[in-house]
Length: 151
Image (tube, rainbow, N blue to C red):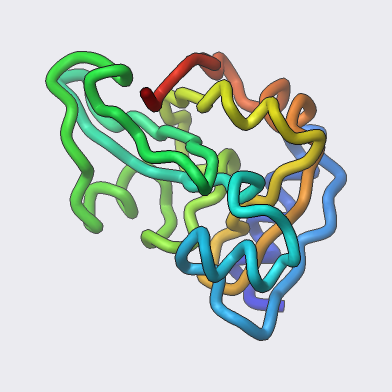
């Protein structure tokens, strides 16, 4: 397994999530690719999107079949640059996990993810993923704010 995926697996266990990080043959860089590779519904894919505002980075965990409405996230928010994503999370776009970052990141969770008993998340690389019970994921994210992020 890729060293970055192993690091994520260790951090997930440290956060109380005993999950099976898998490396898939197909890319999981986009939500569509990830759903096809994992064999799940598009909405079960958690898109880890990093934005920035005057207070710093904001990680938005959005269902794969939804789009983030930045007005609902709040403030003067904009999409983070690839360098800002890596600086905020320690990971490159396409592999950002929902937790286990280099340092704490403000996190907003799309409430529509609760439609599903389980969701699939990136695990540090464009081919590494893990499945987790939705409520266990939310509970493991320190100070996660669960609310509507799409209209």
